[in-house]
Structure formats: structure tokens, C-alpha cells
Amino acid sequence: MFALSVPVDPAHVSHHFGEALTVLEHAGKAEVNVGGRGFRMKKSFFEDL
Image 1: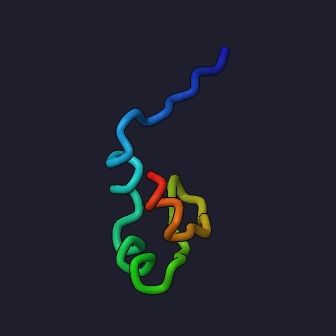
Image 2: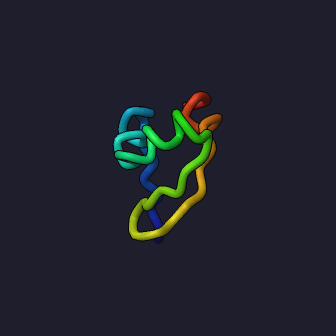
């Protein structure tokens, strides 16, 4: 059996991005590391969050 853990609070998600949030504000996109994996994120993701 597998269990999926999903954050309920958007702030829980955004705190994982650290300095990338500043880069996103200025550049509109940034590479972030979550759980040891790199992801390309756009500013719109955080606006929607």
C-alpha cells in the first residue's frame, strides 16, 4: 500500500524554495531544488499558490 502526503497549506510549499523566490520575483523563472531534484518554476506558479 502507498500513502501520498500532500501539503494542505501553500506556505508549506513556498518555504522550500528559499532564495529562488527572490530570483522568481526579478527574473520570472528559477531553478529550485525540492527533495534533491531540480525543477524549473515560473513566477505564475507562486502567484497561483
